[in-house]
Image (tube, rainbow, N blue to C red; front, side, top):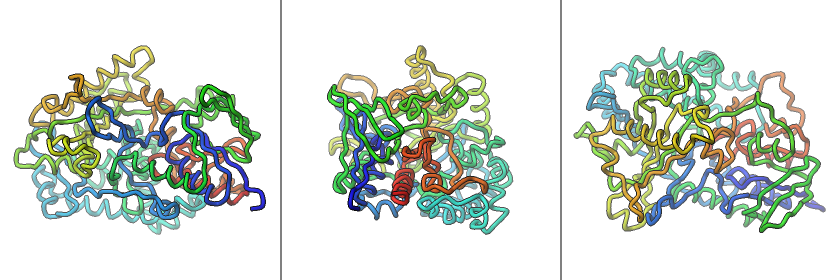
Length: 519
């Protein structure tokens, strides 16, 4: 290009870094502005506890939707660990549970039998063969221009599959496929993570959430990033810088003029940049605030989860003494997530109460990747735990009660864990250098404060289908790639893009492609 175009990216989360790398490589003058002192947004690692050398993935923690195509395009130095175990789910009130071992189908079938769900073993295989077919069909399209509903349905090649997973409430296919309350609950959780809804909700919110959870890279596998989530965004920022992008941290954007000007504060000095394009790697709520537009009360967005990070001296004992805790915690450990319990928890939360028991799931990053621990911690047997509690909607918390609510949630989550363990989780929690328990709890309001996620919604807004309705206008590059805003020179490049949500880089790639096509 005789005169390179310029782009300002507002927000230094992973999608902004991906967009910066693509556009800088194409010859654009790219400036990325991040208000925090570190890049990465929700995909960061942190030393969360004083004197404890463990780099926890503080917010997001697993990766599935980051396309190998993006990793290759941008020469990202990222490695992942594949977990042997898919999940372990204790049967509440008993000493048995369901262990799904990806490498041992015989052991998995035996585990189904142990919980009285032998007939669901074959149904499990058939069900996830179906989701694998969906993944192989849908995922490759996410880095291409949007398909219409009719085009996507034709690509499915199976009207029954389309109707079951796209047209009908998710709970219907789950109930028709499985008989066990426990098995049904394990399957449903992928439709609820970050989404406050019911299995049979008519708005199909669970279906959209479920779809994104089972299509990653055509397999649906969720992997552990070696070195923690911070290693992922570190690789992205390295790629962006090497490509020629300017990345500025501690830069608080104060206003956006949709005609092409961004004003920000850096080192207590106000700066303005004129630019050809503005990429918003922030929520639609935040973008409206920066432009000076009232987003309207009808567009209130709410999250529905709490995050609890812990450091343990060792893994806790299980009620099933014959099972190695390393196997149980080697995948997703489901806690009080029977299908019936998930519905009860939803009903309690919808009526204004903290669910009892709190449904939650655990991930032990350090079992798959000990590099996040110091050599001393590794030798001691210490482990990390990340707990993701479901059905904790934002309407339960306010600015005035947040501290009290955080304490209540923390106690409720630890009690929920205790109900399915062979000993109290409190007995194995480490203490930091100040003698305080290594427990860090984040409410939806905490997420809003730290990351400006509206209502603490981890997806920034309700998830969209990865396709558009047949009548939708796709005439402009921005619309074609699902990154349009109300303003021609301003595009979404993050989770508020049409195919945003989760650590995927897809919103950033899609925005870059739209600008390259338009320029």
